[in-house]
Length: 491
Image (cartoon, rainbow, N blue to C red; front, top):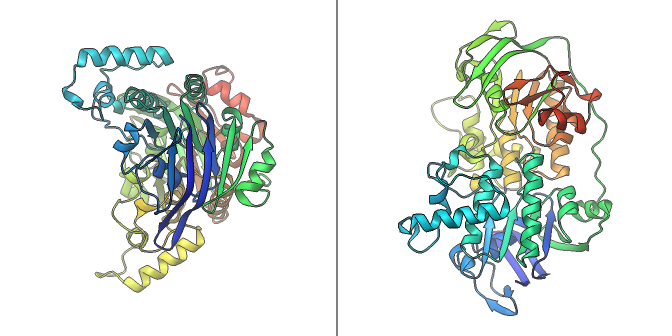
């Protein structure tokens, strides 16, 4: 299905999110849409998928026919489906029930026939999904597979994927790319929205670059990486030199710690974290690093060993106790755990501060919000609702909520969904905290990020935890081997 976008404009108040965008996407192409956070990528795709409507005068043309898309239901009737960065599924329900969502008759349809169709699609793409299992048991990559199957079952001939490689493992990404190439060979048009140059270069035959809401360039493979960077940011961006700010004083000590939940057991973890040090946690999703992180925050109880914080025994203490001692935890699930949908930025910053009285000081709150918005370069205003921000700006807002001072900052995927310039900016802010003596422990699926910003690394595999590895003495290849379960005799 060929897609033509003509004169696409979209305003949100004074913000001109899409400015006169004209783009032709051939049938069966894998089209990359690149741009920094806030460039207008997601807005353009939400217009095409019916989640929002463009301003008057904009046109969408499918196979030469002008159409009007007023809702996601309209879009799927025209054969357009969108897979969002945060999957739109229902975790408490079975896979087969999610699979049927959107069909006329929905959950009242013939389940035997649905099971057969589910199995046929899973077999075609090599997905190991059990239709009777529940969505909340799946990894992010498996939830993507389920959503792709559902959209194809609904008749999608155009698939839009918004930042699909965020939060998935290298193996899951490889599987996703193989699936998308297979769909392209079946004349299904794939639109791949990303800020990751490497992913677009490896997958897409063509790419359009947005900056500041405008289409600033179109490129075809083979690509020049520097050209991509210049189009995205208007300048060349480099990571800079690796910097260690570790001090002698101990912040956190784990002595023979054991942890377990319904899925995994971890034993014999020993780690001393120094002030100003950055510890990176690497591993496939579900390997135990999330449980470890929550134990360091007081959100998960140990079943053995001791956790000491600046010499005090906090074993078995609550999250609030850890927080009072200077520990802050920022989870990856932004709108589910870290932020409050329905509240604006100013209200978030007020809630994150220690109360100074019975009543809220509105002028002081507005001033605080304006300062944080400027300091973290958040594209929004004090009264902007948190869910109205892009994923990258929600991430910046979450980081801006960190209190001062702190002794330990725990971060799940701190730069998830951020472009390279934003990653450099955010880590600059985090390194400022290290200079002030704060230690950082963070989880990332991006091994290059772990190597660039960590002093030492812990690798997790099926409940096993490696000894601390000096980041300066390892490589992506060595970490990849450990993450895949190889080389543990030496780890």
